[in-house]
Image 1: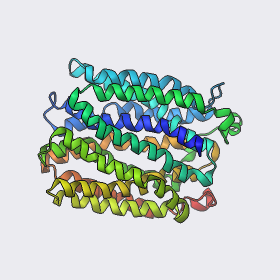
Image 2: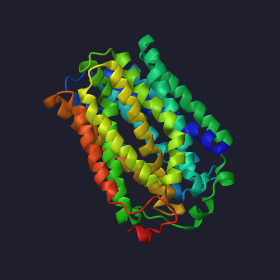
Image 3: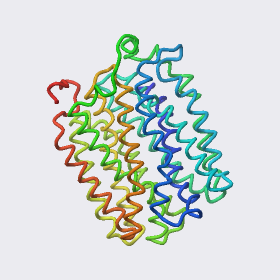
Image 4: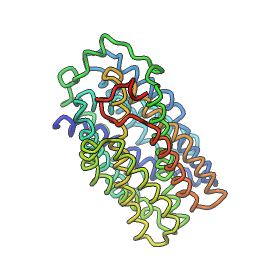
Length: 395
C-alpha cells in the first residue's frame, strides 16, 4: 500500500485544484455577470473540450508505450501546464482573459486526470482496489480541506495566493509521482497494453450504461452544489464569502474521515451496497438543507453529507473498473470522467437557472431530485461490483 499512498499525491493535487477553482472562481465571475445561471454556465464552459478529451486520453493511454510507461507521459505534460494557468486565473485583466485562462487550465488538467486515476488499478490487484481508492480519496479529501480551510485564509489575504499555492502543490506532486512510481516495475497490467486493442464503444454494455447513468445523476447533484454553494451561503444565508467557503470544509473533513472506512466496508459488504446507502443518505441530507436556518445546523448536515459522499465516491470508480477487463482500465476511467464532465457541464447552469426563477432554496431540492434518479438507475444494475461476476452474467 506504500505505492498507493504515494500515488495519492496525484489525486491530492487534482482535488485541491478543483476545490479552489469551484470555491473562488465564481467570485471572479460575479462582477462581470449578473445571473447565477450564466455564472454556472461559465464555470462549465471549459468542460466542453474536456468532455471529448478525457475518454480519448484514457483510451489512448491504454495503448501508449514509452520508456516512462503508459500514463506518466500525460502527467509530465499536463501537470506543469495546469500549474501555469492556475496561477494566471486570478491575474486576469478582463472577462476575456479570465475565461481564456479558465479554459486553458482545464484543458491541461484533461490531459492528465484520467491517466493519473488509471494508475491506481494499474498497480493494485483487483481485491485491494476499493481500499486503495479509499486511500487516494483520503488524500484528495485532505486536499479539499486545505483548499476550503487554508484557501479561505489565503484568499482573504490576497485572492491570488490560493492559486499560487495550488500550482506549487501540483508541481511537487508531479515530482513525487515521477520519482517513486515506475510503471514498468509497478504495473500489474502493463503487458496487456502492448498486445490488445481496446475499443471505446465496445465497453458500453447494459450494466456499464446503467452504472454510468447513475454516476451522471449523482454528479449532477454533487457538482451543482459544489459549484454554487458559496453563492448560496453568501446570498441565501447572508454569510461572508470566506465563511461560506469554509463551511464546505465540514463536507470535505467528514468525507476524509470516512474515506478509508468506506473502502473497507465496500470490500466487506459490496460496492453496490455501500453506494446505495450513500445515495439514499445524501438524498435525505440535500432535501433537508433548505429547511435549515442556522450556520451550525448547516455545517452538521454538510458533515453528514460528506460521510454519504464517501460511501458513493470511494466505491464507484472501482465498481466501473470491476465491470470491465484489466486491459480497458484507462478506457473505463475515461468513461467515468466523461459522465462526470457531462454532469459538470449541465448541472451548474441548470441549477443556476432554477435559482434565478425559484430562489436559492431550489438548489438543494434539485440536487436531491437528481440523487433520486441516480438511485433508480443503480437499482437496475445487476452487477454487484465483484470481479467474480462475469460481464456476460451482468448484462
